[in-house]
Length: 297
Image (tube, helix red, strand yellow):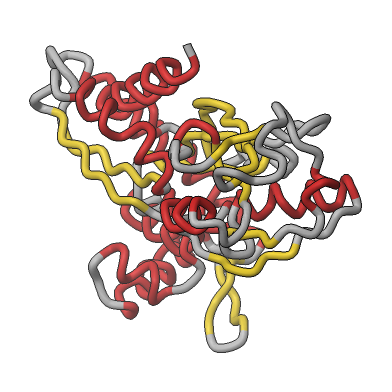
Protein backbone atom coordinates (compact mmCIF):
# COMPACT_ATOMS: atom_id res chain seq x y z
CA UNK A 1 0.00 0.00 0.00
CA UNK A 2 1.11 3.52 -0.77
CA UNK A 3 2.45 5.27 2.34
CA UNK A 4 1.23 8.67 1.18
CA UNK A 5 -2.31 7.36 0.84
CA UNK A 6 -2.15 5.88 4.34
CA UNK A 7 -1.18 9.32 5.64
CA UNK A 8 -4.20 10.81 3.85
CA UNK A 9 -6.46 8.16 5.41
CA UNK A 10 -5.09 8.93 8.87
CA UNK A 11 -5.61 12.67 8.43
CA UNK A 12 -9.19 12.01 7.33
CA UNK A 13 -9.76 9.81 10.40
CA UNK A 14 -8.22 12.41 12.75
CA UNK A 15 -10.12 15.39 11.35
CA UNK A 16 -13.45 13.86 10.37
CA UNK A 17 -13.92 15.45 6.95
CA UNK A 18 -12.31 15.61 3.53
CA UNK A 19 -12.16 19.42 3.69
CA UNK A 20 -10.36 19.46 7.05
CA UNK A 21 -7.92 16.78 5.92
CA UNK A 22 -7.19 18.74 2.74
CA UNK A 23 -6.51 21.89 4.76
CA UNK A 24 -4.06 20.00 6.98
CA UNK A 25 -2.31 18.42 4.00
CA UNK A 26 -2.18 21.71 2.03
CA UNK A 27 -4.01 20.26 -0.95
CA UNK A 28 -7.50 20.35 -2.44
CA UNK A 29 -10.47 18.30 -1.20
CA UNK A 30 -10.64 16.63 -4.61
CA UNK A 31 -7.03 15.47 -4.21
CA UNK A 32 -7.87 13.93 -0.82
CA UNK A 33 -10.95 12.21 -2.29
CA UNK A 34 -8.85 10.90 -5.18
CA UNK A 35 -6.25 9.46 -2.78
CA UNK A 36 -8.95 7.79 -0.67
CA UNK A 37 -10.53 6.25 -3.79
CA UNK A 38 -7.13 5.05 -4.99
CA UNK A 39 -6.41 3.43 -1.62
CA UNK A 40 -9.84 1.83 -1.63
CA UNK A 41 -9.16 0.36 -5.08
CA UNK A 42 -5.75 -0.80 -3.87
CA UNK A 43 -7.15 -2.77 -0.91
CA UNK A 44 -10.31 -3.94 -2.69
CA UNK A 45 -12.67 -2.95 0.13
CA UNK A 46 -14.87 0.10 0.77
CA UNK A 47 -13.06 2.32 3.29
CA UNK A 48 -15.58 5.18 3.43
CA UNK A 49 -19.33 5.51 3.08
CA UNK A 50 -21.73 8.44 2.72
CA UNK A 51 -22.85 10.13 5.95
CA UNK A 52 -25.16 13.09 5.39
CA UNK A 53 -23.30 15.49 3.09
CA UNK A 54 -19.92 14.00 3.93
CA UNK A 55 -18.13 10.70 4.42
CA UNK A 56 -17.32 8.46 7.35
CA UNK A 57 -15.08 5.43 7.75
CA UNK A 58 -16.42 1.92 7.33
CA UNK A 59 -15.40 -0.85 9.74
CA UNK A 60 -12.70 -1.82 7.27
CA UNK A 61 -11.56 1.79 7.07
CA UNK A 62 -11.26 2.05 10.86
CA UNK A 63 -9.29 -1.19 10.98
CA UNK A 64 -6.93 0.10 8.30
CA UNK A 65 -6.43 3.38 10.19
CA UNK A 66 -5.23 1.40 13.22
CA UNK A 67 -2.82 -0.53 11.00
CA UNK A 68 -1.74 2.71 9.31
CA UNK A 69 -0.85 4.11 12.75
CA UNK A 70 1.43 1.09 13.28
CA UNK A 71 3.03 1.45 9.86
CA UNK A 72 3.60 5.20 10.19
CA UNK A 73 4.89 4.77 13.74
CA UNK A 74 7.37 2.19 12.42
CA UNK A 75 8.54 4.73 9.84
CA UNK A 76 8.93 7.31 12.61
CA UNK A 77 11.02 4.81 14.58
CA UNK A 78 13.20 4.20 11.54
CA UNK A 79 13.73 7.94 11.15
CA UNK A 80 14.46 8.17 14.88
CA UNK A 81 17.13 5.49 14.60
CA UNK A 82 18.83 7.60 11.96
CA UNK A 83 18.54 10.62 14.25
CA UNK A 84 20.50 8.76 16.92
CA UNK A 85 23.56 9.03 14.67
CA UNK A 86 23.44 12.80 15.12
CA UNK A 87 25.22 14.33 18.07
CA UNK A 88 22.19 16.26 19.35
CA UNK A 89 18.40 16.47 18.88
CA UNK A 90 17.41 18.65 15.99
CA UNK A 91 14.40 19.76 14.02
CA UNK A 92 11.08 21.36 14.92
CA UNK A 93 8.83 20.21 17.76
CA UNK A 94 5.35 21.73 17.75
CA UNK A 95 4.01 22.21 21.29
CA UNK A 96 0.47 23.21 22.30
CA UNK A 97 -0.03 24.14 25.96
CA UNK A 98 -2.97 25.58 27.90
CA UNK A 99 -2.41 29.08 29.33
CA UNK A 100 -1.98 28.40 33.06
CA UNK A 101 0.45 25.55 32.32
CA UNK A 102 2.35 27.91 30.02
CA UNK A 103 2.59 30.42 32.87
CA UNK A 104 3.82 27.68 35.18
CA UNK A 105 6.13 25.65 32.92
CA UNK A 106 7.07 27.53 29.78
CA UNK A 107 9.75 30.01 30.98
CA UNK A 108 11.78 27.28 32.69
CA UNK A 109 11.16 24.82 29.86
CA UNK A 110 12.62 27.19 27.27
CA UNK A 111 15.64 27.82 29.50
CA UNK A 112 16.26 24.07 29.67
CA UNK A 113 15.94 23.67 25.91
CA UNK A 114 18.27 26.58 25.11
CA UNK A 115 21.24 24.20 25.37
CA UNK A 116 20.07 22.44 22.19
CA UNK A 117 20.66 25.00 19.43
CA UNK A 118 19.55 22.62 16.66
CA UNK A 119 16.17 22.09 18.35
CA UNK A 120 13.39 24.43 17.24
CA UNK A 121 10.38 24.45 19.61
CA UNK A 122 7.31 26.19 18.20
CA UNK A 123 4.84 26.94 21.01
CA UNK A 124 1.18 27.90 20.81
CA UNK A 125 -1.09 28.45 23.78
CA UNK A 126 -4.41 26.67 23.34
CA UNK A 127 -7.29 27.03 25.78
CA UNK A 128 -8.57 23.49 25.39
CA UNK A 129 -11.12 21.18 26.93
CA UNK A 130 -10.43 17.42 26.96
CA UNK A 131 -12.66 16.72 23.94
CA UNK A 132 -10.48 18.98 21.76
CA UNK A 133 -7.20 17.23 22.57
CA UNK A 134 -7.29 14.46 19.89
CA UNK A 135 -7.82 17.11 17.21
CA UNK A 136 -4.90 19.15 18.51
CA UNK A 137 -2.68 16.05 18.49
CA UNK A 138 -3.23 15.95 14.73
CA UNK A 139 -1.56 19.38 14.48
CA UNK A 140 1.06 19.26 17.26
CA UNK A 141 3.81 16.88 18.29
CA UNK A 142 3.04 17.39 22.01
CA UNK A 143 -0.16 18.72 23.59
CA UNK A 144 0.08 19.69 27.27
CA UNK A 145 -3.44 19.41 28.63
CA UNK A 146 -5.31 19.00 31.91
CA UNK A 147 -8.32 17.13 33.22
CA UNK A 148 -10.20 16.75 36.48
CA UNK A 149 -8.77 13.76 38.36
CA UNK A 150 -12.32 12.40 38.64
CA UNK A 151 -12.66 12.40 34.83
CA UNK A 152 -11.96 9.41 32.62
CA UNK A 153 -8.35 9.28 31.38
CA UNK A 154 -7.61 9.70 27.70
CA UNK A 155 -7.85 6.50 25.70
CA UNK A 156 -4.45 5.21 24.65
CA UNK A 157 -5.30 3.11 21.59
CA UNK A 158 -3.99 5.85 19.27
CA UNK A 159 -2.49 8.26 21.78
CA UNK A 160 0.49 8.23 24.13
CA UNK A 161 -0.28 9.93 27.45
CA UNK A 162 2.58 11.04 29.72
CA UNK A 163 1.74 12.21 33.27
CA UNK A 164 3.56 15.41 34.26
CA UNK A 165 2.08 16.44 37.60
CA UNK A 166 -0.99 16.57 39.82
CA UNK A 167 -1.95 20.15 40.65
CA UNK A 168 -4.27 20.68 43.63
CA UNK A 169 -7.27 22.97 43.16
CA UNK A 170 -7.89 25.40 46.04
CA UNK A 171 -10.59 27.90 46.89
CA UNK A 172 -9.54 31.49 46.20
CA UNK A 173 -10.99 33.98 48.73
CA UNK A 174 -10.72 37.77 48.80
CA UNK A 175 -8.64 39.33 51.60
CA UNK A 176 -10.77 39.85 54.69
CA UNK A 177 -13.25 37.09 53.81
CA UNK A 178 -15.17 35.70 56.80
CA UNK A 179 -13.40 32.30 56.34
CA UNK A 180 -9.92 33.75 55.86
CA UNK A 181 -8.81 32.61 59.31
CA UNK A 182 -9.47 28.94 58.63
CA UNK A 183 -6.70 26.65 57.34
CA UNK A 184 -9.26 24.69 55.30
CA UNK A 185 -12.81 25.47 54.28
CA UNK A 186 -15.87 23.26 53.88
CA UNK A 187 -17.69 23.47 50.57
CA UNK A 188 -20.94 23.65 52.53
CA UNK A 189 -19.69 26.89 54.16
CA UNK A 190 -19.46 28.40 50.68
CA UNK A 191 -22.86 27.29 49.39
CA UNK A 192 -24.36 30.76 49.13
CA UNK A 193 -21.27 32.61 47.96
CA UNK A 194 -21.12 34.15 44.46
CA UNK A 195 -18.70 32.04 42.39
CA UNK A 196 -16.51 33.13 39.49
CA UNK A 197 -15.89 30.20 37.18
CA UNK A 198 -14.34 29.16 33.91
CA UNK A 199 -16.49 28.38 30.90
CA UNK A 200 -18.53 25.19 31.01
CA UNK A 201 -16.72 22.06 29.85
CA UNK A 202 -13.24 23.18 30.89
CA UNK A 203 -11.39 21.23 33.58
CA UNK A 204 -11.73 23.61 36.54
CA UNK A 205 -15.47 23.78 35.86
CA UNK A 206 -15.47 19.96 35.81
CA UNK A 207 -13.90 20.03 39.30
CA UNK A 208 -16.60 22.40 40.58
CA UNK A 209 -19.39 20.25 39.12
CA UNK A 210 -17.90 17.01 40.46
CA UNK A 211 -17.62 18.57 43.93
CA UNK A 212 -21.25 19.62 43.66
CA UNK A 213 -22.28 16.07 42.76
CA UNK A 214 -20.31 14.63 45.70
CA UNK A 215 -21.54 17.09 48.33
CA UNK A 216 -24.99 18.14 47.16
CA UNK A 217 -23.90 21.81 47.28
CA UNK A 218 -24.80 23.68 44.09
CA UNK A 219 -22.40 26.64 43.61
CA UNK A 220 -23.86 29.71 41.90
CA UNK A 221 -21.50 31.09 39.19
CA UNK A 222 -22.15 34.79 38.61
CA UNK A 223 -19.31 35.37 36.11
CA UNK A 224 -17.42 33.05 33.76
CA UNK A 225 -14.10 33.62 32.02
CA UNK A 226 -11.23 31.36 31.02
CA UNK A 227 -8.65 34.02 31.89
CA UNK A 228 -7.46 32.98 35.36
CA UNK A 229 -5.80 36.36 35.92
CA UNK A 230 -9.18 38.05 35.41
CA UNK A 231 -10.75 35.61 37.87
CA UNK A 232 -8.05 36.43 40.43
CA UNK A 233 -8.60 40.17 39.96
CA UNK A 234 -12.36 39.77 40.48
CA UNK A 235 -11.83 37.65 43.60
CA UNK A 236 -9.25 40.07 45.00
CA UNK A 237 -11.74 42.93 44.48
CA UNK A 238 -14.40 41.04 46.46
CA UNK A 239 -16.75 40.16 43.59
CA UNK A 240 -16.84 36.45 44.40
CA UNK A 241 -14.82 33.34 45.14
CA UNK A 242 -13.37 30.74 42.79
CA UNK A 243 -11.62 27.43 42.39
CA UNK A 244 -8.11 27.96 41.04
CA UNK A 245 -5.01 25.81 40.46
CA UNK A 246 -2.57 26.10 43.37
CA UNK A 247 0.83 26.57 41.74
CA UNK A 248 0.03 29.70 39.73
CA UNK A 249 -2.39 31.44 42.09
CA UNK A 250 -1.69 35.13 42.68
CA UNK A 251 -0.74 36.29 46.22
CA UNK A 252 -3.45 38.94 45.82
CA UNK A 253 -6.02 36.28 46.82
CA UNK A 254 -6.14 33.85 49.75
CA UNK A 255 -5.73 30.17 48.82
CA UNK A 256 -7.47 27.69 51.10
CA UNK A 257 -7.75 23.90 50.52
CA UNK A 258 -11.15 22.27 50.69
CA UNK A 259 -11.65 20.24 53.86
CA UNK A 260 -12.32 16.53 53.41
CA UNK A 261 -12.22 16.64 49.59
CA UNK A 262 -9.50 15.88 47.08
CA UNK A 263 -9.74 18.39 44.24
CA UNK A 264 -7.02 18.44 41.63
CA UNK A 265 -6.22 18.46 37.96
CA UNK A 266 -3.87 16.09 36.18
CA UNK A 267 -1.49 17.82 33.79
CA UNK A 268 -0.45 15.49 30.99
CA UNK A 269 1.46 15.50 27.73
CA UNK A 270 -0.49 13.81 24.94
CA UNK A 271 1.03 12.81 21.60
CA UNK A 272 0.52 10.42 18.74
CA UNK A 273 1.67 6.85 19.26
CA UNK A 274 5.27 6.59 18.08
CA UNK A 275 5.97 10.34 18.17
CA UNK A 276 8.18 10.02 21.26
CA UNK A 277 10.62 7.89 19.25
CA UNK A 278 11.99 11.13 17.79
CA UNK A 279 14.95 12.33 19.89
CA UNK A 280 13.77 15.93 19.54
CA UNK A 281 10.34 15.05 20.98
CA UNK A 282 11.94 12.97 23.76
CA UNK A 283 14.16 15.93 24.69
CA UNK A 284 11.15 18.23 25.06
CA UNK A 285 9.27 15.59 27.11
CA UNK A 286 12.28 15.17 29.40
CA UNK A 287 12.46 18.94 29.90
CA UNK A 288 8.71 19.05 30.69
CA UNK A 289 9.23 16.30 33.27
CA UNK A 290 12.16 18.13 34.85
CA UNK A 291 10.32 21.45 35.02
CA UNK A 292 7.21 19.77 36.48
CA UNK A 293 9.30 18.00 39.10
CA UNK A 294 10.98 21.27 40.08
CA UNK A 295 7.57 22.74 40.97
CA UNK A 296 6.74 20.01 43.44
CA UNK A 297 10.17 19.47 45.07
